[in-house]
Image (cartoon, rainbow, N blue to C red; front, top):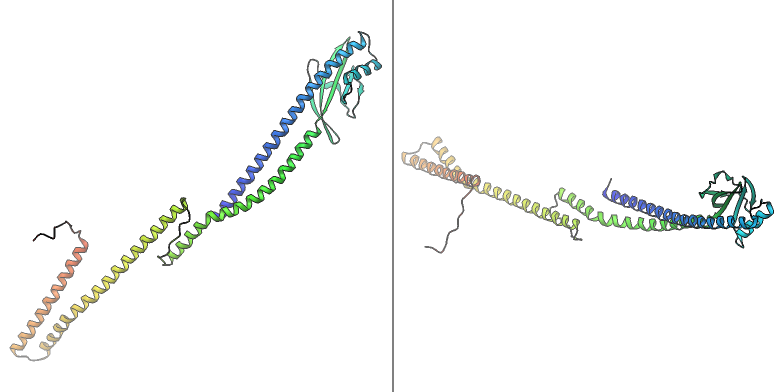
Length: 319
């Protein structure tokens, strides 16, 4: 997998996870806060209604048995002009219910307020349960708080976040694509330059476009290319010098070898006078010594290449 694909997919995965995580926690935190606020408000209202119901019950009944008519008066006094959802049980029998929700009193406990979520059709409620006993009669008081608007608001918030998520994801996709191309473009130039060097073009250089790690890598790469170019030039110069030396050495040995061969053949195939034979032999000896001198010089040059030369500064102005 190419670096461009890895970088692009990595940024996309990171962006998607970040958006999903942030939107989830924002929506969840908002919903929890609003629900907690509604539950606390509903609990406060329930306690106020329960206290009012108990007081009104004492006032209306005046320690007498309660009938349905008196109970309606108590509930009316408790509700006042407010549109409240209330269910009242007397000895586990429903005596008042201004809702279309059927609940049971078994969930209620004395000295405690318990609540639960109730779904009725497309509406959602929080129901609060309380019970108490007066004159051996058990009263169960239930009030309901409609939280449908809170849930609708949360759904609307989710929808808004979904739209924002799509817009940000689209913009992030385009941005990630251009960013990945921008970051991997120098690497592609390095790859192309490496291929040219591998094919023998040592003069290639890369233009530095940034001051980051890629720019530093470009400097190192250019330095490497210059070093390789210098080494190649040095090798070519050395090879040229060796060719020139071999050509010059062959030329220098050609003349004495021609003389040696020529005069040797002359002595071998002809009857010469003692004087001519001595002159020819002298020439052969001189040319042989010349070849020997060339050989010794060659050995000295080989020795200079194999041994390190001690260098020291001298004053050339001294006599």
